[in-house]
Amino acid sequence: MSEFSILSYLNYLRDVNRKLIQRGGLDNTLYRKSSKQSPYYIKLDATELDKNKHFLNSLRHIQRSNALGLPLNPLIGIGLIVGKVEVSSRSKNIAAPLMFCNAELIEDMDTPNKVDLNTFWESCTLNYDFITTILGHNRDDETNSSYYNGNVSPDTLARFSEVEDKIDQICLGSDIESKINPEWVLDIMKYITENVVQFNEIQLFDKSYKFELNKLDKLVQNGRLVFIPHIYYFISPAVGELTTVTAMNLLIKQLQR
Image (cartoon, rainbow, N blue to C red; front, side, top):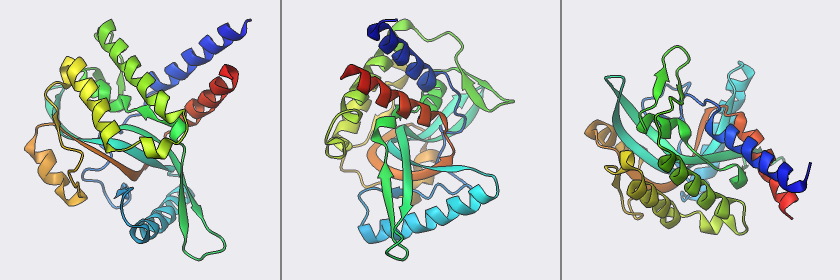
């Protein structure tokens, strides 16, 4: 098999992992969670002191949950969509990242109570759990997961493939952290709202909007979907398939060299 064929196949497998594996629950990651399901949300532009305290508490929560057999993952959310949508004739709360990637918390053994955050930007993917909800895909009530029902047009799928390419250009490149900023996130969402009709009515907040978690209830109850272009840390039930996406991204990069 030629190197080109192997590369094409790996790209195909990566897309399958991104788009077809079910991830139920990531269309509402922040709103009205119990203490056991607390998202431990914090903005990445918070002060270092606030983030360290937050990461320490979050790490302890993850450790306690993992010990009880409830795996949790630290994730980075990029862009936040908040509001309500109608799903199967009922209203559904939305508090979802537009895209997200894996992260890990590392406790500094030399400095007591010091926790560092390591982000795997190369694992960044669109939140297809949220996207399928907006596109009107069916919902499997028994498994609480979205699944493809074949009603999405080829043009819509092509637009999201273009968005994935835009994400890869940044997240698989160099100097990533300086490029993943509110301006870039807002540009990505503008492209989606302008090119995918189901997203046309989402209100875009200015990149300078200062979102706080205590504003979430008002935004959700307002009903209309709004998009906030900021970047934040949160935890969620383990999303294991992102590990596969990360591994494939690295292998594809090696072959392309």
